[in-house]
Image (cartoon, rainbow, N blue to C red; front, side, top):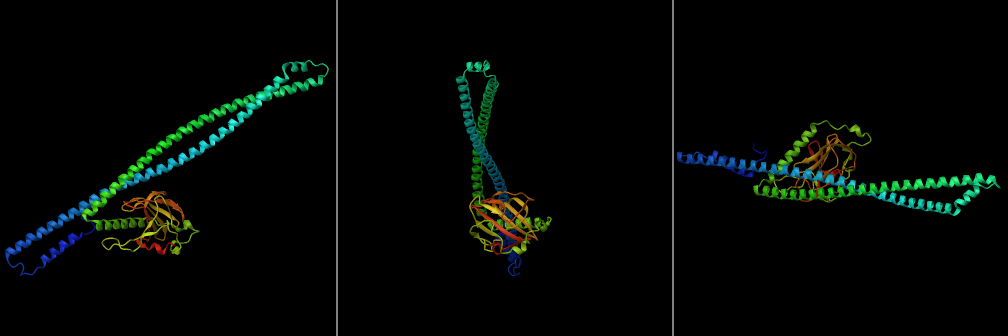
Length: 389
């Protein structure tokens, strides 16, 4: 199938073909010259066919590389998400371990106090002596004192017995805490090892991605099909928006307390802060194509926020734009956020203005980190600079 664009070489050869078709009768007066023109025409048709096949082959090869890039970047972002999850678990484990170590210190202090009290009681009991206890029992001169003395001794014996039990319980609790600390420490080390493995995988994916990008860029340049690729990218994005338009429109009454998107022109906040590397309507390098959005300079991992409330209607990898999020704001208004490092929302999620939806990256084959941002009314791109302040 011939691609939906026309190579300049084909156009050039077609012009030759038309020139031959409209040559004057004088030019092809003889049978011999006519035969030569027929042969030349067939040669031109053959060359046109070869160019078409070359372009189609180049397009197929480019699509294959884009698919490879997509698989790599999706795995990369999954690995990054896993790293974030592991980091969160490590942080929680460390906090829990610190709490348990503090609890252990408290138990150590309590155990030391119980031990000192028990020693004091035993020492006091020894100083009173067993004979004094017997003398009190056998005391016939003051029988009223006997009952009080026996109650006193029973009380202290019971307290001593309770302290001994408390001491034993403190020892048991301390041993449990120490065992739990050991388990938590082992789990923490396992998480750190898993983190190291995932980080290694992440760097491996990034290195492979760099190789794919270099190979893809060199191939496109070698084949001279950059213009066709750019046109195909815009064509595919147009198809995506047409498909999204067919879906059920967003019900703006979900956000009854918010103003309609159309009333927010000039009042919206940019999704990230940074210089505009590419401005809306600026010419691209080749073919007279223009930028339909803006490219905002930002550091890798910078939080990307929604410019207004709406529903996530697209959240996955897309040709040339990488990890892409599209929000439907109602009344056919949509905002688009491309080249993300990580997507933090899912299709169907509702978001509010300034809510974090992604992080800045370089997905989609970009060499530098930046956010690609568009605002559209239906399929028509609008100038974001007129909407955001």
